Structures are given as C-alpha cells and as structure tokens.
Length: 63
Image (cartoon, rainbow, N blue to C red; front, side, top):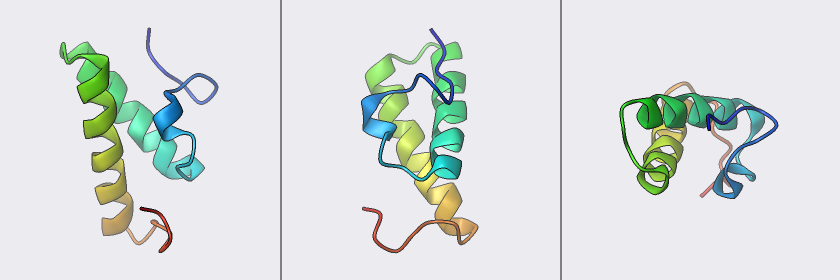
C-alpha cells in the first residue's frame, strides 16, 4: 500500500513535513520498482535528507 501524508512509516514521523513528503515519494517509487518496505524506507529517508541538505532545507539538529 503506498504511503501518503496521513499514512507513512513510523521511522519518518520526526522528519520535517517537506523532507517527509520527499521521503514518502521516494519510498513509493522504490516500492513500485519492487524493493521491500524496509530497504525502501531506509533508502528514502537517506535520499530525502540528502535532497534537503543539498537545497539548504535540512535543520541543523536533524540526525
């Protein structure tokens, strides 16, 4: 089942909303490509953080 702004993995709950939205989009694309949920979540969070950092959108205190 694809994730959205109301239903997403618990691992994404502490991400800022814009970063979470990017992580959700990445995770949904990875699921569509056949990745399992666990790896899709990890890859999506890392990718969303990298995207946000590149665009200066990542808060300094976000791990």
